[in-house]
Amino acid sequence: MKQASAAEKDAQGEAVCGVCATAEIICSKWTVLVIRDLAEGRSRFCELERSLAGISPRTLSLRLRALEEEGIIERRTYPEVPPRVEYALSEKGRALQPLIEDMRRYGREWLGACAAHADEAGADERAVAAV
Image 1 (tube, helix red, strand yellow):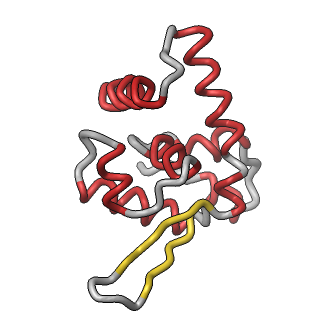
Image 2 (cartoon, rainbow, N blue to C red):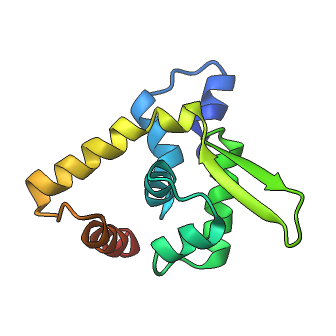
């Protein structure tokens, strides 16, 4: 039996835990790293794909689409040849930045993660891939 999502529970008038509702959105594999990279200024599909070594184009596309549906990112298409698409955090997405920073700080202080993004990205991706 499928468990109701936080949005479905809210629509049904059931109490929704804020932590559960947030985790439901951002805890999919790669999602937090996509948000982190968008916060750091990467905006094109190819830039995100390069930064997230190991992510398949299909998975990246699915994560971007899901985040867009949740209103966390905005997609802008430019009428050029070839077509150019850029992604950016929406206001709702930018509100997640303190959470990402807290995760980064926790990783450094308690898990011995490196401060440099290149080292951090590799460690983050290995951790996500293990999930």
